[in-house]
Image 1 (cartoon, rainbow, N blue to C red):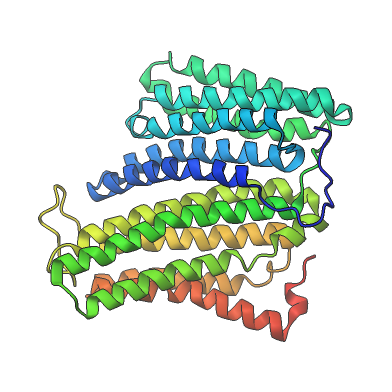
Image 2: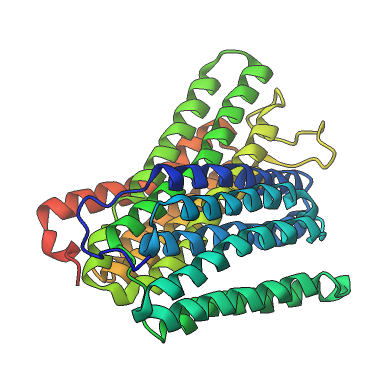
Length: 398
């Protein structure tokens, strides 16, 4: 475990890393499900707080292992076993997501303990076998161990201190890589890291696919096969595909390879990208709830415990799309520095969802609103794709 070559050719995700990612599907689905139920019952503020806390645990657990693996993946028996220990921790963490959404962090913390045990052992091994980065690896191992002990101690605090203590410890967690990097950066691989983040983006998009499928199913149950089914199906699919396209417009691998110093802002900026996509999946489920009523055009679904309007449902989706577009734009501007002068494109891209919400409020049928939302990411894709062909110098990495 002496560190991987940062210029290694054809560096791709390993089968073990793909299996590791698969364990997070359950955790993400659980977090999105809790947000869906809270939003449908119109306890949105409470649901967003619970979602933010649980998704931080999911995102941070994935990210810390991913950067370690990019630098020190040996794929030997010891490495595989300690990675599998972390997978067990992810499954325990996933089991604790429903409780965490209600303020009970016991199970999710225990899952974190299991994960951290495996990761600390890996960092300790790297410290022994990579003398050039021993201080860096020891800082990671010590920092993670200390903060994990604080997470366990947090369980003893009164509920009134729950949110404040969470925010404090989350900030300390985020500070650990910055502190450790002061002793020297680990030999992570730029194209490998970019691929790993892209794969996780696709995993989170899976929640959107589930929400879209349920939306189509809801229309079929409510009205049978009709034009509404085609509108919702086409709109949901085109929205997901265009959001995927927007993300992969960013040449993250090349930019990170040329400017490794931009990695922290790029990596941390993905927190908003991942959260907004996971939330979008949950909010598409809310739209599916609304579409279950025969009056899918407008009005209120009175069969729900907390009746909600079509405007409320589409507003949630529009906000998630807007946050996603803004976060991808910010992440792109940080890593490539090429689109800082193209703000007008992204401004139009985030104004279009607001226009769709106003249109629904004025009477646009909900099935029509979903394909209309696609115009926002589609506009960004068309302008940038055309610009890269016509004026590539504006899109060059700087």
